[in-house]
Picture 1 (cartoon, rainbow, N blue to C red):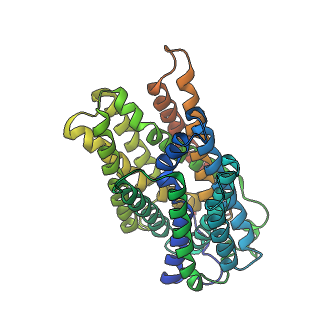
Picture 2 (cartoon, helix red, strand yellow):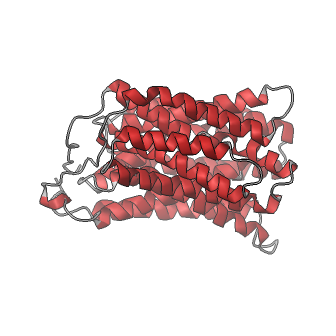
Picture 3 (cartoon, rainbow, N blue to C red):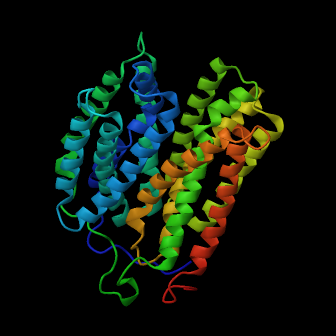
Length: 390
């Protein structure tokens, strides 16, 4: 393994890290209720079904760009101020009147959430237990999204879009209670005095970010179309939702396993092995379908392995770029991949019948996984000479 830089300055305490991760999870809470929120927009006539993919891509891209902006701000202003602004923007955007154009409103909300994600990313980048911190962030995301989705699912009647937005605003407001625990500074953890870490992100870091974007984008793409694909394979619609909900429980379990693994072993190798495991699960779903207990196990297993893969990609980025310059942008890259790749893959549905369809979408995402794995190898091979082979 390459020799790796430790972050400059003190790492966040457990309470400080927990506060930052909770704030970041609030910035991504909308991802858990997107199906409910967007469905309400359609029912209320605010957007057509054909435009939902564009709306999702814009909102997730805004989160990604907001997180990049938040990371840049962390080197100039106190982290608490970045978090406060993110909370305020998120609350305001979710309280916009319906007269505000929907694409604009969701983009502003995404940018505010992105600032919150940037705070979490900065804390993770400065954490000594990098892999465990990244896994804990994923667990909080999965748990909070599952909780709010279940809360709305238990309601007597489906909530209006405004109800969902108000819930997002309330949760964002509650995270303000954790602001006193946020460290004053969460500036980049790179070593400015080290010649190997001066200047821009090295090529290995850019390649690692591209690999992360491809892999997470492909995994999210498969997940995004999983429900429709299961129905196309003969699974009754009333059975699909419980299967996907069970898969979210698998995600939480996978994140807990990733926390327990922590810094042990090579993160890059773990990312490769787990991505191959995901491809085996997808191949089995293609070959035998999702009927019976085995089908349930495959769908739940997909969520489980997904949450082991993602924190491993954060650890892999440190192996590929030991200067840590690319590390704070791991979440940004992953979110950009999640915004772009599923939308691009979804366009394949519109191709002629012999070429398009849901099977083609999943196969395209699987091909992106293979390309991402190749880029993991390229990133490790391109490590700065000062660290390669050490």
